[in-house]
Picture (tube, rainbow, N blue to C red):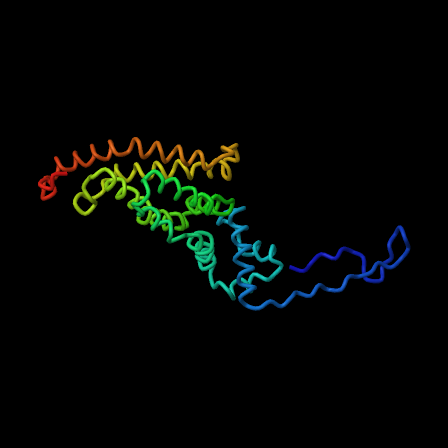
Amino acid sequence: MVPETGNRGVDATDENTGQTPQVPEPRKRKRLPRSEREQMIVEEAIRFFAEVGFEGQTRELARRLDITQPLIFRYFPTKEDLIERVYQEVYLSRWNPWWEELLEDRSQSLLGRLTDFYKAYAKAIFTYEWVRIFVYSGLKGVNINKRYLGLIRDRVLKRIMGELRAAHDLPTPEEIPFSEAELELAWGLHGSIFYIAIRKWIYEVEIPSDIESVIAVEAESFVNGAPKVVARLIGEQKRRTPGPHASTGR
């Protein structure tokens, strides 16, 4: 699109001063190294998708970056490629493998591990971009949230329930697999903490000033209430599917 210039030419004079206005020289774009340009596009894409969702067009993203749309596609051949990079940058790059080690560190109490984990996890994900992109991906059908929730289920929730079983001398997952109902207990804990972020960056309502105290209470509630429910669920599974675990004495 040709920029609008109005009706006044270069030699026109200002009606108020009678002077010829100075015509600014065209702004020269700084030539950036490829890696810097690529990172600049990714960082702006994160802000852009967090603000407007995945309906946002790369044409508008290019305008915000003050570059051409074809230049974006030189770095990311498709919009899906750009979204994939956003997923890696916002979600995978913030994943800390130490969290998984922490959850399995039986030198600490289960309550202590859960509290420490969710405090660290909240610091990593409680951001405007993380939360809004996650929600937009679900609304648009982009698979960011499905992939990430699969990671949470396998690396966090199953670990939590396995450690809860171990802490209460209940059968291992190898002996009796987790039931859907059992995993829902872990989802409930996880969701209660994530919902704080939803309230802040989606609903834009007030949240507790001391999030770490809330996390400690949620973890304590889970540790105190879940074991009894898990034991009952395992007992029901045993009765439905009698097998070798019946002779383990657990």
